[in-house]
Length: 78
Figure 1 (tube, rainbow, N blue to C red):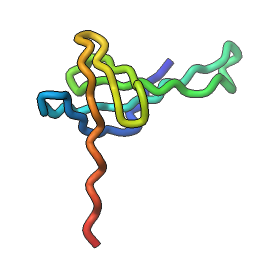
Figure 2 (figure 1 turned 90 degrees about the horizontal axis):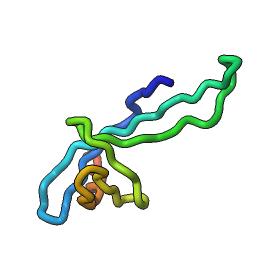
Figure 3 (figure 1 turned 180 degrees about the horizontal axis):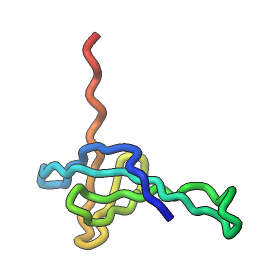
Figure 4 (figure 1 turned 30 degrees about the vertical axis):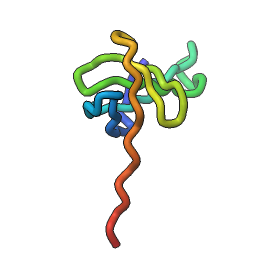
């Protein structure tokens, strides 16, 4: 099983601290090595702590139970 970084974003806790979150997709090859099941998406802080996705913009740090809210994406200037 290989994990590939597919994205990253920032999230804040209730006290305003900002966390850098990395989004990975892990492939699950089948026993024959060809088509496997759908990739599994996992989330980790840049320092390696695991995160569970609760909803579209809400995440939970596994180790501490701290709730994080995803920061909105900046709007690109045109």
